[in-house]
Length: 169
Image 1 (cartoon, one colour):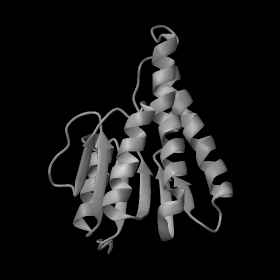
Image 2: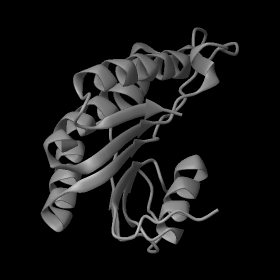
Image 3: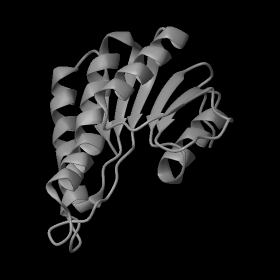
Image 4: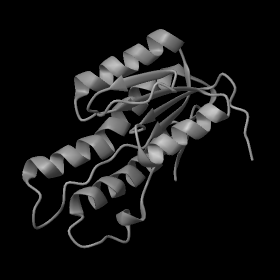
């Protein structure tokens, strides 16, 4: 089933491969204008691709500014990016912090930055995981980030009620 997203501006993190890439290509196939960011080079099939590490505040700001300069508004923000850096037995302090920056802080900052620029019926979709509730051994970094993302989703939904729809999938 094809949906009509003609000329809707969709911003997706972590879209160079995997789930994010599939989401981005599906939106593109439905007519959306797709802007993506990933820490690895992205395919040229998208309307705007930015290479950068979203754990870095400057990268987030530069990306958001570039998207807003180019399009002025957005319709949908999909916070997909997350990484795994191990857990209890092998993750360092910096590993744990890095995963939280990518999986929770970046979605917060991008949501905050884009909030004033959402078109009517705008949406934020945070890509969650069952790991938030059904963890596997040695996945504490990723599991904590996905749990934090679910909590962030709930809080954003309350804060943005009537302005932007916020869901986790």
